[in-house]
Length: 221
Length: 348
Image (cartoon, rainbow over all chains, first blue to last red; front, side, top):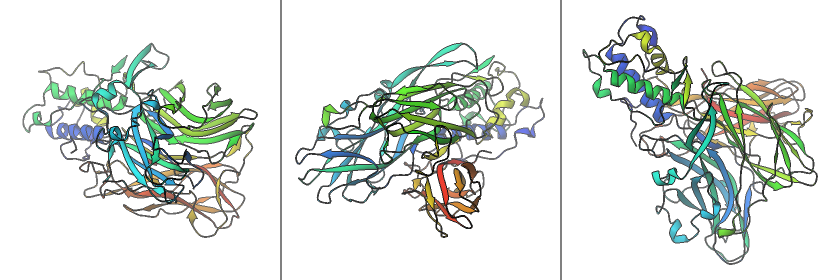
């Protein structure tokens, strides 16, 4: 999505160029509005960024010789998403670092953006429910290499997205104070997490897949 | 007295700002509310580091991770979350906060609906005072694994909790922005300085840590990344993606300097550490000397990385991830050790 700021980037100005009692001129006002909108667009945060592990040091999931059910490798977060003006959270730019243990068994990795308090059992395990594009809160990637590496996505660089209905189920209450040592308050804000699953995509031997790294960051998209 | 942070983002209309015409109070009010919203937003201080199952912490291991982050200076409540797997009990102590006992679930196994839940440990930290400016905060994360028990760190995060109020000094009050009245510079002084403050929404780009000391404080080298080579080599198994916010005001700039602090030491003499990018800007940072013989935080020379491009759906200007590696070599030392690293945007 295009930036919401007028110039698509920050513009330098001198906040102190006006004396205290001078009216703020329209040029500075326009630049200020631009910069604030740009800071809001660009202020998305990195959720998970840690160097991946070597082969054998990641999170594994073992498969029996038959069956294609999904298995959980790891859950990352929770984190506080930034909300857009329409109430949806920013999208998630992500990448998975993984491998299959057996060259003849390709593996599908599923990445799921969900409410922090969701049960992994809520993961859509049926293949039809988990087809790419069916729900942007899940994306799948196929891994065929036995050497851990960042997986090239099946198509482009997909983003994880949540609908407004989905994020409404992710709201939680947190206790804060209005100021240090001040009055206790409650805030009601969404809290999300990301889980990575995998399942056998081809092959028929008992084997395993390994998640060796994961990267996720919000993006205004 | 505090300034309210609106719950939803506002979008001031620049169409209402015209040369020779006064800027309406409604537009100023929307700008003030957007400014306050920005400062009240959550920030990741530690973006999800993990040690993974590899080290296999178990059976009375009592160890410390060295953590560092740069708080915003606006938030006085943080949420630490620890997601782990293992067996038995592990005591967690974050900085000076009280010790919590974690009883982590076993690593996930099984498929479909039998997948177990991985509940995180949550620890709320209320600050006694706000930090001044964006200055480094160093925290030890201590974990003591019970006898015959085990513990693997899957995700350790620290976030500034979104806040409903800002201090008067940080927020732009809207009560004196009144229709029909002149908007003088001093009336919107916080707003004017805030709109020029590119540290709002500052991004911590990555974090890595392995134990550097025992719980009692004795330095250990068992888990640290190390090298004895005189040639620069990668200290991590794999590099980590990094994409900086586009806050540069230089015309045509496509890269921005990112910084890295490392917890490093040598046995004696001198070693060097640097950052190296691959893909994107693909630069190599200048080397920084490490001479301390005990674990000490060192700020490395910056590395230019690609800037986020919000005209692209993914934010990636070339639609490929630029990755950053940490490299080291010894010069007069015999061994270089690095146990923690954080990657972040400029803090001033």
